[in-house]
Image (cartoon, rainbow, N blue to C red; front, side, top):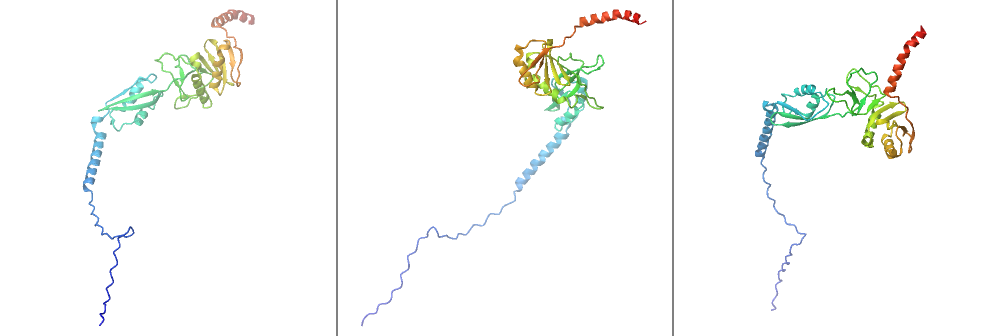
Length: 303
């Protein structure tokens, strides 16, 4: 009898090693519960409240009431008027007092251009004053004798020069009538003020004032004339291009005789002519005496 072979069980397939594309499921841990940050909120509330209380105390405490207001140097501003204006700041709180408050207190003082505030604990304020700069003396026709000199400042206003100071050694502007209003200071006419201020700037930037002295700035129908001291020259500069024209004169100055009218209004050239003859005061006085001496004879002939 032939033995019968039993069928063998299938052999298990070899287990494959997991590759890069095999993903295992991993149970995620439950996220931790977030607690409300009571401590941080409480600390922030305390800090904000403390700062608010400190600010309220600083703003209302009499410890910081302004007891002294000092200033730096100034020249043109009236001392009594300045003291009266600054007195309105006394008693104000040091921390709430700003530059706007100081400027408002000084608004009626025409010579004050800027004011800067520096606080000093516990109750002092220092105010640095910056004044307007006078540029020209304005010779107003028909001004009464003894009237204060008028000066042009940098914003076009015409202010009385302080009587307690020596007369300003500045060029004299002639030929312009200032404009006066019911309120506020006098001003140059709005049609002329920009060109006058431009001419003053050109006198400085061109170096003319460093080279010689300007006696007069004369306004006429054909523009402006600049009269140099000692009748060195009268420069006709028109109404524009002042810096270039004055620089042209300085370039040719060494080659030009004195006592001439020099016309600089034409581009790239200058023309000259003699200045008009002006009688001296002695000659004028002599002529007046001769006229007075002859007056009775004229009256007698008329009789």
